[in-house]
Every structure is written in C-alpha cells, then in structure tokens.
Length: 126
Image (tube, rainbow, N blue to C red):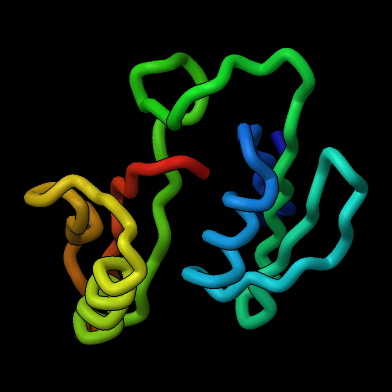
C-alpha cells in the first residue's frame, strides 16, 4: 500500500462561519484564502496547513462536543516547551476554553532535546 505523503487539509462543519473564522484567524493566525459563501478556506501560511469551514443547511445547532460521533479533537504541535507555554498563555488571553489538567500532554515517545509537545484537547465551537 502506498504511504500517505501528508495531510492536504482538514474540513470542519460549523454552525457560525463568522465566529469560527474569527477564532481561526484572530486566535490561531490563519488567513482567509477563499469565501465560497457556505464554505471558507483558510491557511496557516508558515506551515501551509489548509482548513475549510463549512456551514451545512439543516445542521444540528449547538456547541462542539467530543461526545457526538465524528471529530473528537485536533492536536496541534508546538516546537518546544517554551512555545507551548506561550500558546497556552495566548489561548487563555483570547478566552479559549480548554480542559485543565489534560489540555497539554507530551508526545508518547522519548522526547528529543527540544521536547516536541502537543496540545491534545481544546474545547469550544470550531
């Protein structure tokens, strides 16, 4: 079987495109590439990671829940323990809710000297 070359993009269903776009652009630093009306395509330019936000007619309203079958969480990677602490401070200042005590975890492998760390669970509407 051929191996994956990487992840091309992540598509998220959202209830409010404007609120979701403000989070990804204002808090995480994404830029909007295209607005198709019910779908907006965003990019994180430093990593070239592409994110699509879609509003579907007839979707169930309400906040995100990992208890609903589908997306559980998205893990982001920080380059060092210091960068991870900066992101945590940034998220708190921006009012991003996350689960204390399990919001950050170390990768499940021996850490290299720069200790790759991953935020494992952020909650809130996406």
